[in-house]
Amino acid sequence: MKKNGFTLVELLAVIIILTLVITIAFVSVTRIREESLKKVVETKIEQIEQAAILYGQENPNIIKTSCTDHEKTVVEATNYTPSFCVTVTAGVLIDNNFFESSYLDEVNGKTDLINDVTGKSMREDTVIIYRRNNRIYSIIDEVKSNEV
Image 1 (cartoon, rainbow, N blue to C red):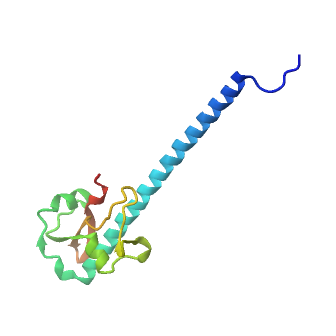
Image 2 (image 1 turned 30 degrees about the vertical axis):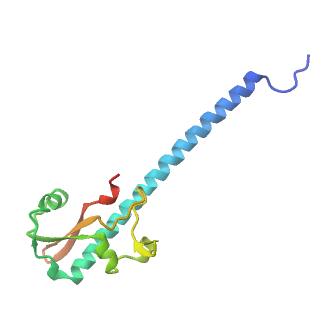
């Protein structure tokens, strides 16, 4: 007897195998996408720190506040205890044009920096600017845009 076509068991086996392959591919693509979005946010945080350094260099007289409130953050990251520092938000840096336009987004007619992971504005994220050996440094203090 000649057999034409596939049996039900063979068709179900092929469907199950295809479903497994598609599921594995989907999970992998999703993970890669999430990791790339995190890298984009890390790059934006680095840009905030660089903009803060430029801001501190153009406004050296602003670094005159005692750094006791932020000492722990700076010491943990740099093993250095600054005497004076200032905290600014990314919004101040954006409004004073210390960012390249390629990192900024237009939201409701206003220039903004968006956290690609959460979709929130990064304007309230804070950065500490401090002086060490007559050079200006910065370190991110609080990334409020990561909060859910």
